[in-house]
Structure formats: C-alpha cells, structure tokens
Length: 374
Image 1 (cartoon, rainbow, N blue to C red):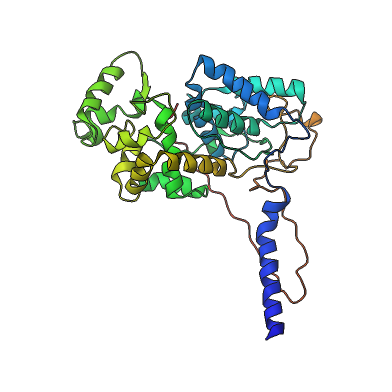
Image 2 (cartoon, one colour):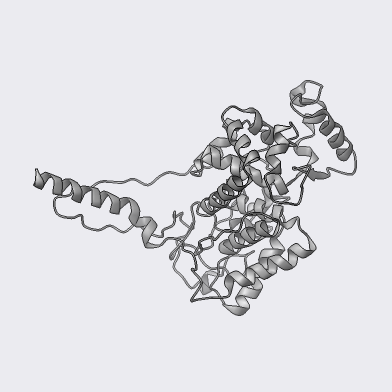
C-alpha cells in the first residue's frame, strides 16, 4: 500500500511539473525591467499623463488598441506595424482603420530607447500605457507583469474580431477561444464606459432594425431620437457609448444598458440575454466588484499568447520590424506563440512515474469583422 501511494504521489508531482513548467520557466513577471531599465514604467506613465491632460479620450483609444492587439496573434504589438505598398499589416484591416493612439506608443518608445536602448518591448508599452490611462480616467489601479516580446508577423488577413451586431453567444465564441470566460467578456465590454462608436455601427437600430422599417424596439425611444439627430450631422460622426459619464471610467455603462440605453446592439444584448444579465446587474450595483474584476481581467487578457524568452524581438521602432541583420536575439521565423513561455523543457520523471504524452493546442484563424470602440 505504501509503495503504491509513493508511486501515485510521484506521478502527481510529475504531472504537476509537466503542466506548470512552461508557465514557470519563462513567465511574465512584475518588475521585469527593474534591473535592465528601472525607469521604464515611469517613462511610459509620464507620456500617458502628458497626453491625457490634453485629450482624455485616449483611454478609450488605448483600451481598443490593446484589445485589438491581444485578440490577433496575442499581445505582441503586431497591430503597431505600419503597412507598406508591398506589405500590408494589421493596421490596414477594416476593424483597425479607426484605431488611434499610435503616437503615444511611439513617443514612449522614443524616450525608452534614449534611456534604455533595445530593452523595453512595444508590447509591454501598449500594456502599461493602457493600464495608466484607465487609472487616469478614474478606473482601478493595478499592477501588470511585463516581459512580453514583439512579434515578427503582422497580417491583415488574420484580423478576426467580434463585431458590434453579434449575439451574446456568437461574441462569446471569440472570447472563449482566447481563454476568457463569459463573465470576463461582460467585464471587458464594460470598457465601453469610456468608448465611442461611429454611426455606421448602429444606424440600422435607429430606423430599419433587421429590415423591419422601424427602430430597434429594445432601444429607449429618447435615445433613438438623440442618436438620429447626432448621426444626421456630418459624415459618419461618432458618439459616446456611455451617454451619461462619458469620460469617466466607472460602472455607469451597466446602468445605461439596464435602462435600454445601449448604443451598440451587443452592449444592449448583455442586459437582455439570460446568460449575461445577472453579471450586468452585479456590476451595476457593485462598483467595487466591477473595478476589481476589470483589473483582474485586463491582467489576464494581457497574457494572451504572449512571446517571451528568446521568441520574437525587442523592436527599435514600434512601427517596423527590426532589420534581421541587427536583430540581437534568436527568434523563430513566424514569431511562434508562447503562453508565458518560450520553450517547453522536458525532464526525466521521478522513479516509478509514467510518462505522459502531451500535444500542442491548435490555433484557428478567420475572416475579419469590424469592432467599434474608439
């Protein structure tokens, strides 16, 4: 009996090692730049503060950029690469044409290169800048692990993001594919509390919803009139997704959609769908809970398919890949995905333990669909 118990314990220990090793050996960590670039986070924070003082809408811009980056090839700054006449990048994909805030990342990178050349990745800059902008807008203050590396691929054909007219179940498929729960999807869409949307993303809800010739019956009639007036001005203008505290990061977005004042169809569906309405009610009535969950979920999203260790590179300029001749680290030709690790290392199991074979997970790609948060 004792012998069998020892064998079982050894097997459990070995299995734990197999599962945890990739995450432990080369994971992201808080304070990654403490030695190589101690002022890294302060430099990024300073740039964001300067820009926020002039334009508080950058919180929405950076949140959108971070989301769009992490949902395509992981959080690897592939969204920052500039397109050329010969080689288009993610920037040229439909959902990313209105993404803004790139100049903030570029300025932070310029200052970081002056202080600590080739040390801080653009992927980490995006993560840090987004975190800092959320706090400046009144949102939670949270600590993010760093150590991401920049990807070597930026392909517009890989941009596949959940659109604003999807049902809750259809939208959740995209989030679930990235390891996020339904609750976490509702949390992340709460970022729309500081978001914007162009009229073309919701205009059908105002007059001809699903070909009915009438407005969406789930939208507050007063909001229909207001948005109809807004959209009649100029060419495809934009409006706030939270029509109350538009520049403040709070839980008001959830109050608005409970009142049928969701601008986007997917936002309103969160309050109507039985699978998510409970989460909406919780976040509307418990602002502290929303802040805590948002911080936790942003940290989790920031770990999606990251490159670490020797994968990828540290770009000299965020808008362009490094010249291969001066690339200082070995990297795979396609910027292979790693979830908090650069390589799985095998070790011999303890005596008496069975070897367990593992197979890598596959990645699915699809066509791009537009997203509207600005």
